[in-house]
Image 1: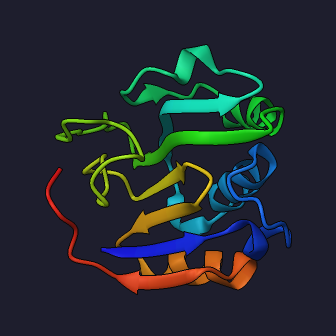
Image 2 (image 1 turned 180 degrees about the vertical axis):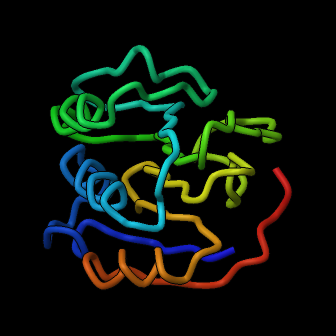
Image 3 (image 1 turned 90 degrees about the vertical axis):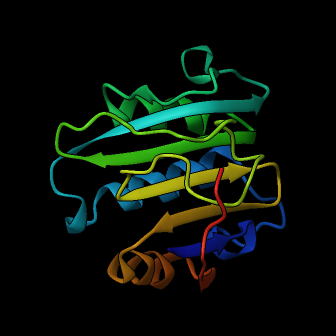
Length: 155
């Protein structure tokens, strides 16, 4: 598993990390990558300061009907404390085996069949998980960040 840690300074030069604008920028960029092809976005465990996304607060992946609508709503959140966003290929439903569906848990992907998974973790970093080096390289070309190969722990 490849992991990319991105901080606010990597995205927009800000010392604060996980602002709604930063998270939306990363999700918006990833959505344009040709590797994604046909699939579906899911979001869950989203907790923010200032504004709430009640329909995505539950600690479980929920279907995102329109990513553009979700991104617009995320941009209005001053700071995300938690949030898991996953892109699942084709018409698959998310396979989750984690006991706690939250970015504040074991450092391993939560959606087993996601091609890419993005975590907004506290105010510390935004983390991207994928098996595809091309996805990590594209994100790193745009936002920098610190990439590593991990053997993920079980959830």
